[in-house]
Length: 159
Image 1 (cartoon, rainbow, N blue to C red):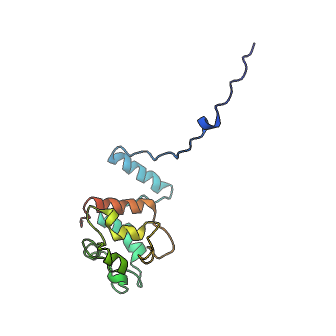
Image 2 (cartoon, rainbow, N blue to C red):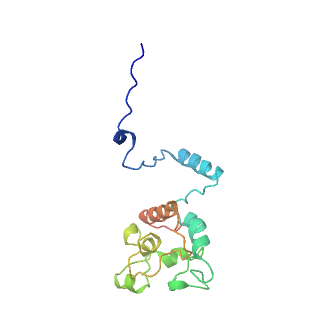
Image 3 (cartoon, rainbow, N blue to C red):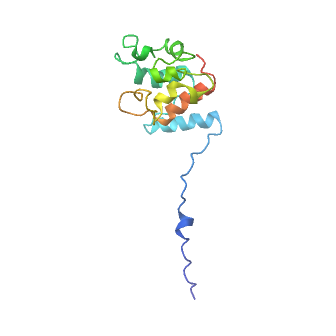
């Protein structure tokens, strides 16, 4: 004799209201394996939280157009070309009116939340702080934002 079928779990047990969290990468070797896997499927891994990596992956391709933050464009008095970006960002007062009045630095080492660069790059730029960046109509990838924020948290060193 067959036993009756077991009832399915209730909907609340089958579906979580909370999104799954991304797994933490346990080691540099695991991070390298993840980066290689992403690269093999066409995805671009986020840059390392070092200025040189951020320069190559974010500033140069997204910010240094001739009319933007190049030495020719110099928008907002900010040049983000290789070799000039650190001196133009770290411990430099923001020139945008509201940010300057608030005493914000473009990059405040150790404090991404009080760094004007992070405010300009994240979604939800407060009113009065000018245009969201990059001014390409596209948001930076979250991995790029995380790398910049971590670089600032780690002291915003020039490498």
